[in-house]
Image (cartoon, rainbow, N blue to C red):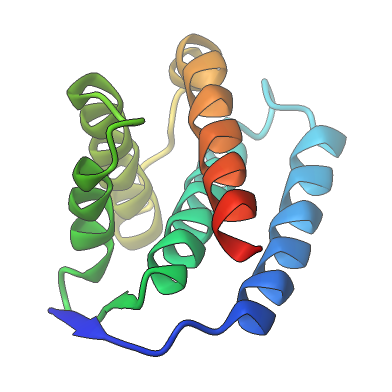
Length: 133
């Protein structure tokens, strides 16, 4: 469910600090050994940046499909082609299987996708920073 909210720049600034901590954490672990944890954290970073961006535009998602709706909302930004939206949805599903079913995410997945995920993260950061001014 998509809900209209009042943008809260201070909340977004706080979220950016948490995101920065997640990025430091990922850079400190052995991704080959902890590929599932790294993948989950990449997902969390992207999800939190997306939440920050949407909240700056007065949008919040809630309910059972909130994470899926966050990704679908990114379709409204020309910066995200369908290929990237599909990648984010795939990462969401892998993260859900990991979190709820204990399925491991193979290190080859993150090795193959890391550059694309980093590109998405950088785009989201840029958009958040442009909209927080």
